Image 1 (spheres, rainbow, N blue to C red):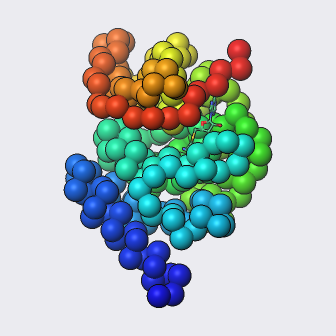
Image 2 (spheres, helix red, strand yellow):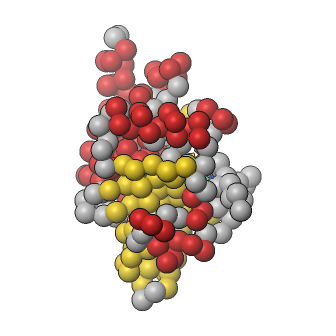
Length: 214
Ligand code: SAH
């Protein structure tokens, strides 16, 4: 089978078996997962595994998140297309690309220069023009661009960074895995209501740690 046929078949399997069968039902999320070429975001030797439903290793001991996890967070964010989204942990740019298909603008922050130096031109080359990247400790948020309708954190935090509440619109959502990086985390959706945060637990996941430089 040609490489492109293999990728197309494994992408279809990902959509049916790993996403739809496991509860991803938002049609816009499924369309975004179909549209974004994950093989462009993984290291060359792992291209043929691009649509396996698992996190894959990338540079600097970091990972590209599992497709199910990316789709789960995107669905939990309840995006309709006109939102401004902040993502913490650009990594390869894959999650930002998926969010860019679902929202108006995506602002994404990464703390490792080497990761951003690959992710930013990659997102440009693939035509994701509504994504803006920045090198910083993302636990501070991005005050100049705030407020955001959604904040998605793609690394495990011990607690919710304090800066986020003031950078969130009323009715806005924060999707964040909270817990110790060793023992796994609980995905939490915080929703801002009357200036306070309502908290919902969405299940157990496993992420690399959010590293706070301050
Ligand atoms: N969304 C990424 C997966 C990211 S893995 C993708 O789709 O490829 C988590 C990322 O968070 C890593 O790249 C890690 O370097 C980054 N990270 C960890 N702590 C951070 C911080 N304080 N600020 C910004 N990025 C951080």
